Picture: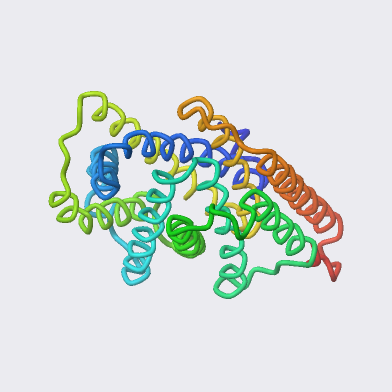
Length: 304
């Protein structure tokens, strides 16, 4: 574990965000499975309830310090945006092929970069801008603009992606002063509280198998969120956004295994473009870090 913590911050962030991507994709796949019969709002509430039970022992150890926050207003803004992101993403995943919904969610990368520049003052040079644009074009190749893939559920996915992008940037800000437990508690209890009444109104009694699926969704989501918070505390938001594209591979595999959905040729072509763009971004960042280490007083190394 110590060897992991000794790694460069961006590398630790990259490993953590990849783990979070897998856990989140698995959770969304299970939501799609359960969403064939249960309302999305009910699944979201039960997911938050399960995560709250998992978080409770951590909070109880140092209560009330574990829920203290220096930025309550920003925490509440994050809760609202998280609700939009979760409802949009889950609704799209339930009603669209898993790979397509995941591809649309990749628009988050664009929003993260824009918001990181605006709110975090991160310097994003032309190479990384180019890689992100190419990655977004890869998503367009998969979705074939103008086709039937663009429908009301696609709009849900884009809205969720925009909200998720801003959530990622807010996490970067909050992680500088807030504890991981505090950030998780506000999101879990906040979204859970908002969805309680709508979930009760739309309630459909789950079967025993669906209860097991709900428990698995909560566990996967809990650890995905912890990994994401850790990643964005240590790595640059605009860099980590590019690595999130690996979720497409996970979505394609789970879509085939669980729903017998094989991606079309355009999906594979777009995925190839996205992966190349993401790898290129990481390569350029590694080269920049090497250059800065060798010549810390040098100028002009932000054009990566």
